[in-house]
Image (cartoon, rainbow, N blue to C red; front, side, top):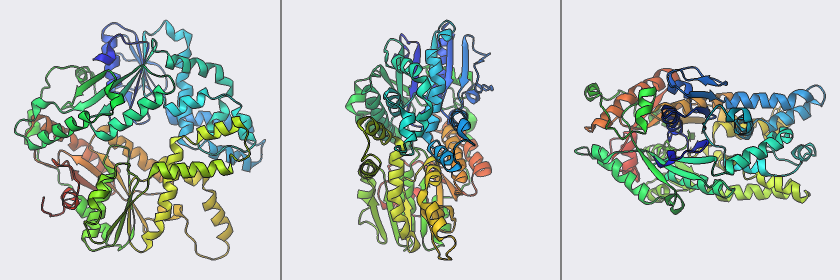
Length: 588
């Protein structure tokens, strides 16, 4: 593996959720430790669980992995770090400042940027702690900080004063209020990150267009701020030796080959490794030691005799949705689980039954809508361009908040508005304008905002609170967008996931976020299931066997209702393929 050759002191693994960052980071740590290097493995990813992978309890303190000589691990709890960070900032002013001011500070610290910055605050100690220099040869991080966070830390200026004057917006500047005392430490940490002799960034992707685009975006963003020592790992590539006689396996290989061939030019210039798809779950030392190995896999022959799970189809789920005659259907989930395709499948199913449907998406790849446009009666389609609506939102904030700022204050506000939170808020506002249609037809939405965005909207929703305050005692009926999302009679939230450990864990976390925002998910949809289709490839049979436990977990522990959607040999584009995907009796 090229990314392991002459490994520097610090190795960072980054990429979209579900691409295998944690598994590769753990396998790398084991391989270096087995070679006699002293290694500390650090996780800052709330969706990963290093302790579970190793089968031990680690937590927020350095713990020796007894089964691997020379290896220790640490799990930084981002939510715990964020809470401690909030307490450190809000605690001293509680009871001193007016309650309204304290509440405003708490709202500024309610978002994902606080969590990211607080986690970065934790592991900068590991980058700069001289006492660790003699204890470990390598420190491996799962995952890397984003370019946005690093740019924030590079900015000069008095964040606290900027906020005290009421000039900041609510997404990322609030968390910066507590950073002033650590500026020297942060500068040293950023310098270490940018030093190619000490730090290597490993971009992890799948052989899929979406994750390769995300890796390309991350590559360019980090390279622009001086983090140039980057490698690419394409994980989970279907081995060509496993395709004989299995049409589905052959189709997967062909799709992956096309995605790799169309890889962005900037990624093509990076040192690149491919890791073959494995038939087993990457839990335990034996599995992790095999991940980076080229040794042929050994299959569980019992998997060949296992039948397909008896689970509802997506079409059966739509039966219940259709009974209402109209309403809002929102597809939510992390990246890479197929929300756009599932939203289109739900919309086509509803329209096929003669119901009026408006499908709206923020997916930058609009080929699906182009295929559907004009092909089915009762279905209208719109596309919200994230870049356009985000630029409009930024311009609005700069024109209002930034109109009277000096150069330094405007620079801080402009950086704040580059936050991923900004795009989520802007897209949600655009979605909110469409919500009103759901009173007379079905509105199917993709990509739905994350649970974080809904929490942020609820915490900082001055509009909602103002309406409640102004109208609550008048007896006049009113509905805000948040109230509609919280009403199960008006809105049905479908959480999309895959039948794999990490996506299911991420979906469960999203469900918890939604519940904290007062939104109860209506159903789960397990997408791209190998267990739901007949296969002959030994690798696919084994993968199908492993899916059963995750499907059972969704059915028994997580979902009130769920549907299982099969992995298709042909991309589900066009009405007939989408009907086939949903389980409708349609001509393939």
